[in-house]
Length: 419
Image (cartoon, rainbow, N blue to C red; front, side, top):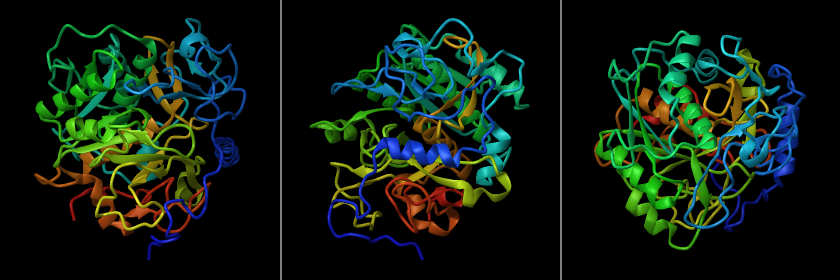
């Protein structure tokens, strides 16, 4: 039986460890993961490598961190051991954490993720559209996606065969936003993760004009209008006054599975993960021992008390309001996933962050099936506790529901179907 009650106050009984403690635990648990070519070892946290900093060997954000209301930040994190350049770390020269095209990619690939989470392969998800919403334009998105898919033996997903479509926030093929290499890496990560988890799915990329909250929200509504039943978001900002009103305007879409990352700075709450109806996703860390996955996975980042009301499907007593997160998946950049990007990177790079986790979960929803009209997909995992991996290790984790990993990580797709 999953434990759902540990405290009667709005403050979790376990407390909230500092991000440094989370990073230390992740480094220990990740010791068996193979380093990327030339990597200097594990270290740092998801929030490490501050924007504009000098080159170093800690994990670095792909985008500047959101510092004021009304502006989102992407949450891709470049693997430790990759030198970080100014303004987000996109040096023109090849970096030790990256490999050239046609080299064997580091990080987890599609087969790893399917084995870890017992996911079905094609034709599962065939014809279902997963929308990826990001800001700015990645001019190499389709070409880079083609290389990723061909490298891992996945069928082509192109504009020509009707599998891939890219539009602006109004739903038109042009004009597209200005390009940005930081968001470009996020786009590559998002497209690659949807492809890895649901190779048979169609992909709709909606690019907002800027990282402004209203622009990304408009792009979200466009994705729904164009028929997406699954939307993966890889951005966020700290909660702010009035954010739930904005959430109702842009993220309240019953019958659509919408995922968002809980944040890359340890325990805390980001919007739109806190919005009503959004599946808030946390990150885990794990070793590469695929034969013993459940004992090697542990909490890494995520969790907190949101300002939004507690939904009826949440029964925990961590928070009087909504508790984040709902579910989790691999996101530790010390391990990372393989991503192919040639706009701001030299080819294959190893990337982590809760944005990895959020896209994995969006694609798992697509594998599970189209949600019923009017349903709340964020509630589905709560009705299927036995169909998830209960994560009991790592800061803040324990038997049953907990803040950093929610109900757990995927164990097949049954937990992501309507009960």
